[in-house]
Length: 175
Image (tube, rainbow, N blue to C red):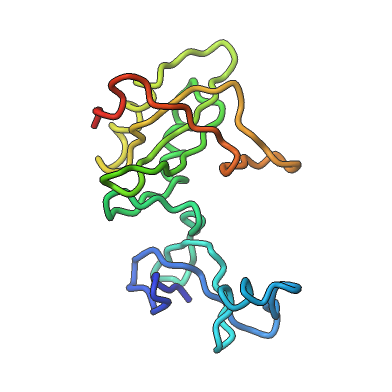
């Protein structure tokens, strides 16, 4: 089933967290009762942390991970959606979208991008590319280029290890 932030059934067509219950679901985290209590409720529902949408046929479509969700001024921004748009740009090799603290909005959308060898693009060009393809609240206001993104042993980008550079002059004023 899909549940909202209060762990109530999500409305049809809405994004919610996947909850799973059954004899094949884990009993808990080894020697971590606090983590177990957070992930598994008293009725045995395991809250996966995966955000999804379900269609009229009962097929689930993963949208993103709950812990990566960016809440910008009360609006939900799914990093994966913005990353997919960045990957459509011909110069982009890798992209990681993260939330960064913002005094008025809570979080702001930011993107670290690695370009393909021999290709060029500016942060402004990449920002405009995304801005033309997503809702106004979703595009990254802070974009920077990097030589590579941190990865784990399996090659997955480790967003928690991304270093966010200080905004350049005038960048905070962009919208």
